[in-house]
Image (cartoon, rainbow, N blue to C red; front, side, top):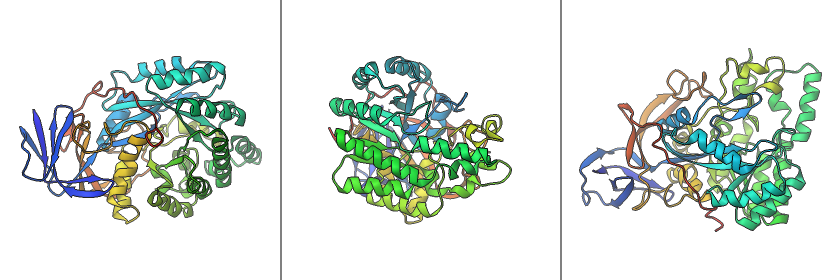
Length: 460
């Protein structure tokens, strides 16, 4: 059976054109001027955008953290993603100290295999740098995992020293891989946090106050210098602060292979949310923390200038009840993470509505660039003949209000409760299969396939 998506505006990074899209099986067969293509079935997209499916390059399903784990499984998390127009996620396999990268990857394959409603890939979190780990990085690349995340934060858990980062970057340079960096000065942050608790300051807002933007800027600059010394490409994850953005922009202006992402929470939420009374601020605890609102304008500008190349979610949901509440009396015990995989496409479309970014830039940051950055293009990230039929029909005139009552993520609150947005997903195809329509969800766990990725296509 072939399906003709007709009457819509096909959106790419260069803008929108009126075109019809013919889907044959799991792939796009043709993109043509209206009236030139025919199909067995038709899907009317009149008045709507036709987008390449969203790619969320930063999620944490079933992630262990602080004695608990994020509450979205690969099944619930990918179903929620599909509802929001995301048709690919790249999740993180988390190496524990004393374990191997390959055994960790096997464990995450077992978690995801047969459970995902959309296609998925993996990055590898490296928390134990040694000779064996460095050798295994090459084997991970051979297994389709060519990006490795490291942490300058969380001493005693994920933290790596500058020397360990240097060694991993040297290996990444050798094998063509990309180092992803959580850039915050964890040693200084832990000292500030201990001082706050000793002084009796234990509320959630302290999470933000003890992780100042200067320490994100410092760590970002240090990571960039280490990458410069080693010749390694560098991708800064979840950038939140003006100081960090300035460091990235300077490096890019100097021709260094430095890339960065931000997340919707840093574009729309602020430290004022962390300061909400009655422990409500715990819902907004993530790292890096929400910043003062003045940072938001810089982040939007960074998206326009491409100093911020990608928008991901860092989706890592913990329920307010029983999980976030673990930190009552000590903000350090609040599990770090927020839900968002379902709302990224909608929230960034709101940036289009507000004039912060263009229609093409919306698709570029949410789909096309992550596809290239993480070795999936042109299979993903574009409406073109031969590409996977991951397609979102999006109604820009629809109105919606975000709420925990109506979202599909497996978490008991919404970080965007009451947000009124213009635009909403109408229909979603994952490899040619309609998984979301106005009638509801039509996908199934196990439809999603593991994506063995190529290396960063901006470099190789």
